[in-house]
Image (cartoon, rainbow, N blue to C red; front, top):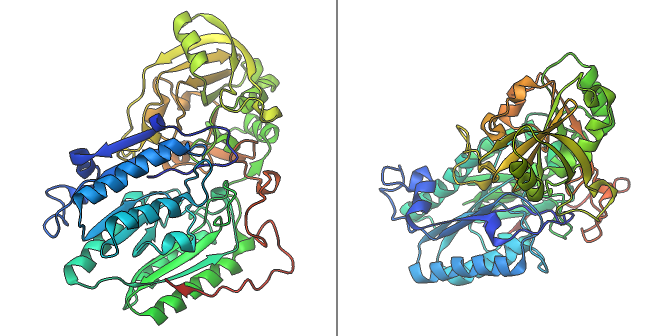
Length: 492
């Protein structure tokens, strides 16, 4: 069950937000479970169930229970199992439930019994509590942000599991330690220091004789629970080596805590728009980071649309901008009924978020319908079976002055050229996307880029969100008089 959930987002993730994969389709999801996969000659793969969703608000409790019960039921029906590849995210929140992954994993362990080795593949933005990690035998996480190694991480979790089963090595030691640092992902991109060097160390630690795996988690900043903080787990057959390496990695992370910076130049919305308009670089990309659906934002805010049309150069059409994509199924329906070329007046945005702050108010937009599209298919190289790369339902584009806004039926990101459908982002002066750091295709597309620190469910300014349940002291909420946090790993 893979989703990251902002507890500061008014959206709620329902059953239809998940893509559920079962049986033969689940074996086809991974290269190494296929009949010609390199591991298939060593083990018999038994497909269970996998559920993945676009990040969003907390999962409805009944939805979580339904998926959990299907997973544990399939485990019990298929058992006894020698091993289990546990493909999750690590930052799921469930309405009315603390530490959702620990709750889910305890149920999975109860279903497998103590004799099954469980190997987890996780996002580095997951939260790793002791209560969660104690139920697992092997843990690994992405080593790149953006997550260009996501499928490599899953393959590594499977390969390490199969190696231990085939060679009869049994359960390794796991040295676990949390670090009292909680940073947004946009400050921990591995494109930049210090994350580049910190994550760059992991392969050399893994290569040490006796070490099975080394993983570092940044944590998920937009949840408000005691587990929310960075963590290190080193898995090894030598317990002392595991403890030493985990301690060293944790200390390096802690010592670098003040060195983490945003992955690009920042400013508020108006500052970023003004700088982009004045720049000769085209296309100039701006990240609407506070409403980023792939971090857990609602994706329904028209705040940035309003700021774009407040700028005279854009309102007049002397400068053009493309702004995908605000989730508003009602507005899409009006546009489709009106047809391309029709003038429409719409209350855009706020379908999930209205009433939760001044930035969530709908924007009254009068413009011309310039495109209607069916769901776009996933682009080349898009992650397999990830609904974040599905079409997002039907869409419509409306142009007012120089600004073209893309409205979507369902929450979706715009990460690849294919996500834009019939619209060509290279034809616009500015492209303003609901995203944080730029994914690879956008990164290559951008002649220049700014990270707009906008309000929303994944606001980059953590101090204004109102965390009150995280364990304190915790950097950056606390800084002075907090130099020795006691980073002592424990064996699980």
